[in-house]
Amino acid sequence: MATHDNWRKSSYSGEGDGNACVEIAASPTRTAVRDSKAPARATLTFPTAAFAAFLDNLKSEEFPLRNG
Image 1: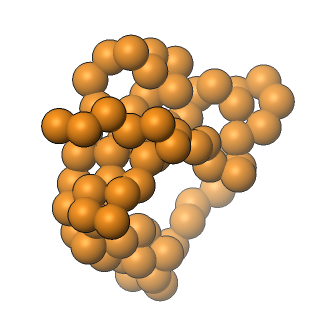
Image 2: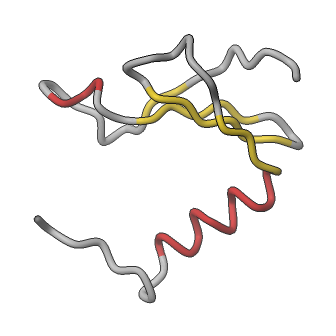
């Protein structure tokens, strides 16, 4: 697999727990996900279309964000 060099963290990552999140790197055909606290460890890789569908489902009313 090709090395991803465009890793980015969520814009919701802030002070304090800012390192307790995931990072993603996207290419035209694949999206990779890794733990921001252990970037040298393994990554999960998904077809870009499947990852986009996953994010769309998370944003839908079927899976509302919960506080707490």
